[in-house]
Image (cartoon, rainbow, N blue to C red; front, side, top):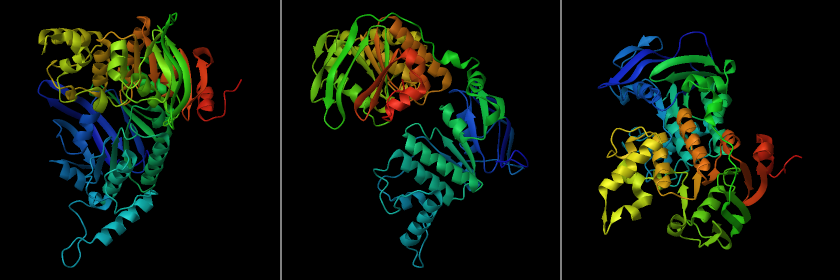
Length: 502
């Protein structure tokens, strides 16, 4: 990294409007060769618009855009790629039925003398790139079945094959395990050593401090500040992003727990989890913590009836709940907010009001027909309660930001008036400001006497919101920690099998 000399890319005072909407009023950032630069801000801060200008998707209305000290103008994505700019998105888009090498060199395959594709040469070049990155992926294998982490490596290799000098990574770690994150960071450091400028966009602030050398923050379409990472803190970054302190992220109230809402007794699913027992009381937030793959989500899925279990039982309000049936779980008063809201929690092409009403269809029907006016009233009522930001309730839910999509999932289940709500990774991929709103909603649910079972991989979220923390290790309950005794060290000791220090 270098603070001296000329930035490889410079954007100053960028302005972009869409009709009456001002997406950017002062977009400003400088990127230097060999530097990992964090780009932070809430959803709607202008980050995506800046990236789309960099990638040639949008053209700015005003402002100065420079590459290597010279004015730049991109008429489209091809111009941006030709200038050495590559964007790696959270969900890579590879062709499943092509090989890894074919995906990397699509449209640019090396040819033999007979104008045929030279697969041997293409595979050789891909192996060379992967070797430089320290990645072990067979170039001749089909892309189908690759993990998200490996798909990202293929996209990075594709960018390097085009001699990219600037690489934008948009939420690249959202779907990765810790070991996959560490591999990605090792690759980013290799890219830096080669002189690539890396722009890193993430809502995970701990990763920003681990990887990046500088940070630029935007708010409401305008530049706020740029600082070396060692000269700032998480609390200062949060204040710059949302205008309030870090403590506001976890609005936890103290409630007196009531009756046992959920009772899990010796729940077992062979090869997944074994002999798991715990309770959740009314007005209590209980967190399932542990490493990725420990069995946390699988326990929650079994409680809700998505997956069958082999032994044990689940009781809701003291009444046994038959396993293997989400419908029975819903009728008994259990709500389930899944980790993957797009695939499992929402009908993305359907309207916002229809999604909100999905779990309440039975009481909205009039005979065989859905009462549309009642559906709209229900949706509008809950959209107000969860402070949903939308244009029209008839708009498809895929038009909303990730944070507002999560609010729709929560509204859908809360409208069903459950006794227990299970929330799996409730704030994954959501900006800091919306995280605070989701946490407020979870706290209010406990205040209304609902039992909350929360699964989270984010340690600050677990420590900030839970009344009790159940640590799962290799499918077994490793420790139970009350809020007053819980800290990051105790949780990690239990999660890794070292026991809880006394």
